[in-house]
Length: 110
Image 1 (cartoon, rainbow, N blue to C red):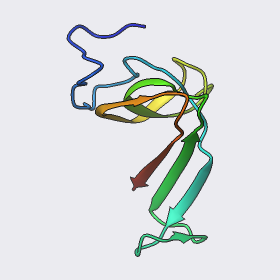
Image 2 (cartoon, helix red, strand yellow):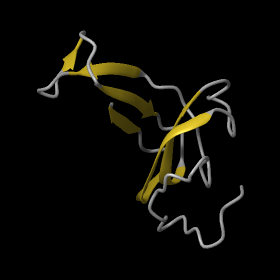
Image 3 (cartoon, helix red, strand yellow):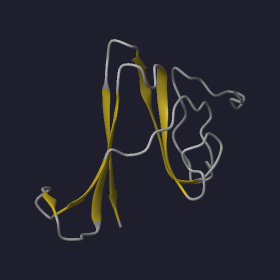
């Protein structure tokens, strides 16, 4: 783990455009579903400029202090430290343990 000086896992700094990797990568997983979203916010089979990328972390996955997320693509993007980070987000800490599951939805508009 290579955490930047001054980086607090309990109170992470705001995301920046300069971020190219996670500070403290805990777990990486493929999306369970990818859905196009229409103008009313509903799932549609028609291609739109809005997509929801959803994954569920089960009780045995991603346990620990969660304060950042990254969206990765490219070669070997499911392997830690590989792939190109396309999006990055920090948040107040979520302490996930093996008694909880967690669903994450990334909504991307382009």
